[in-house]
Image (cartoon, rainbow, N blue to C red; front, side, top):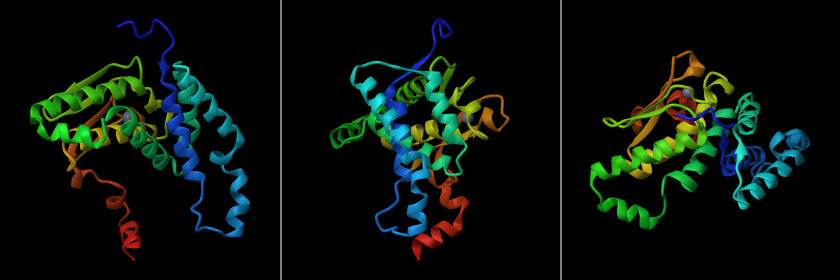
Length: 228
Ligand SMILES: [Zn+2]
């Protein structure tokens, strides 16, 4: 492949989705009017003017049909990955990206999909997973598995810039949405091997949603709080 021929590029919409997620994370609910909390707001990265300026820049690039250097996107990812709430920010960005670019959401698409065969839906899923991986980690060696659907990336760009693989959550969330939308709402994507956690490669399997080990399963108290 000619992946080293020129510096890799990403779509500015990807960086924009990440900063939008960061800003949303740092924007308090209207219900929160605690004075001490309000006092801390200016220091919150997502509400910083610098972030607003960057968001405008990415929106302009997007509008003009131009691309963004992968290295600049990865610098953003590296910065956010240091935050304790990084996984939340990455996952929200990934879900938004999937809905916008990779998962063909919308009532009409869904209706058409319901009429297509299992085989056709799996093929569509594999194509979308590959497209998402190419967009988020351009130039990497990407392989998809047919049965069950899965994906392996030998040199994922996201893994080394995150902390213990947390940056891969952007892609995991994209794949997750693709699996649920394009193939089966009762399944999800699990990031089973990660270079960022010491594995030799990054790999994703499609698993039953109940087995995915989501945030609620890892933090039972969160479920209890939500219920109360
Ligand atoms: Zn990974």
